[in-house]
Length: 187
Image (tube, rainbow, N blue to C red; front, top):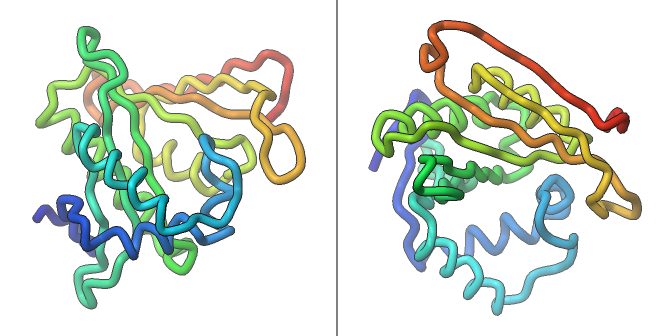
């Protein structure tokens, strides 16, 4: 088990499937995710979750230390091993939003991943409408190179994705850079 100030990070186990299924059945959570349709998930979705645990470089369950309550999950998977480029994913239960835990999780996972996996960069995608996530990523990452694309169907309409690249503080020589490029879609 690994820890940050308020949170514990535990390796995924099959007994976590019920908590993860509840997380991915939370409508508020689902509509913030980039990759899937917003639909109710059945018990069969647990097989998908188990696949994540098997194929990701790191797939951890996040718990609140004082009560051991389930907060969410975060994962790192290799996008391009040769170039040491990994992807970051995070999902937090809506009951835990607005408490600073998203920032705490991302800061921990970025620092841990660069320190222990010898990464060159970490990439992520976030819906342009998810302002809270964008704020979290900007706090935790020094370099965010955003690309706005209007190509994702979400909640009855198409919206943009912002794609970023992260490096922990100090990795870019102390230079804090925030550049966003756009193809004309304000996101």
